[in-house]
Image (cartoon, rainbow, N blue to C red):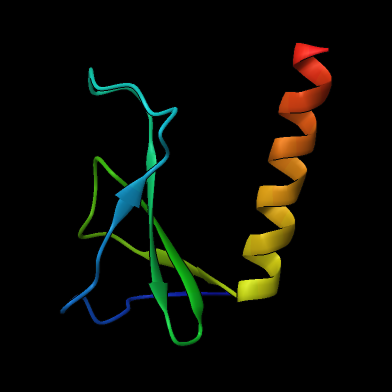
Length: 72
């Protein structure tokens, strides 16, 4: 995992479908060849976190498992 400024051209940023539309706290992600970039949606020009594709997958699996447990 690395932290640093990443090139911002031609990136397609997206938010979770669970994100609020009323300026609530949110992160955005963009797929890149090295994995996934993550940034604060309210400060898109600040530092970005880069995680590997496998780390992103584990994160998604973990959040889905938590959501499944919470709804049960």
